[in-house]
Image (cartoon, rainbow, N blue to C red; front, side):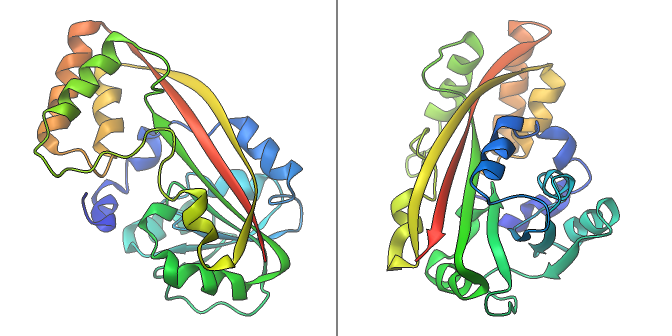
Length: 244
């Protein structure tokens, strides 16, 4: 897996390459009181703001944490009303009880949980919430010609390249509950799909930190052989926990 600051070189195109999160995800966050008008929300690893705009649009007062300087520049430009902190969530200074909730959109797998969880515990109010979500590209329950080609590329990797359990991506609920700082409230999944041209396939897979440039080229060629458009079936997975 590449270093997380690999995303710096994709800062100008990462957001356009990644499909947005489903609206149902934000509806659930509102229902769980993670997100809503006037709520103080800490966003962990905000990137160039793929989820930030949706949080702001739903009335949240967002403080975003992002270590990458170019990603921060784009985030600030797109969302000038958002306070942006420089650094990793493990290292930034946060006031005790400063936030109603903390959220991580496809970023928590980069975080040192042993440091971050107690840090977030201090920064949240007594009944504060932690929401962690991530999209899985390639629903294993649906077999397609395109997905078979993708899995053939993955299977050709050298021994020792880690492949995650597809529908239980890191961090797991058990990892998020470690240390008894947070207790699990619930988890949800939303299946959805997106139609992509070979060029869009290349731009999307380029954003995957565990895909090499040669593998990206191979998946683009595979998509082009299948047709002008391929359908990728996805699942967005959300875990919500409460501060203990």
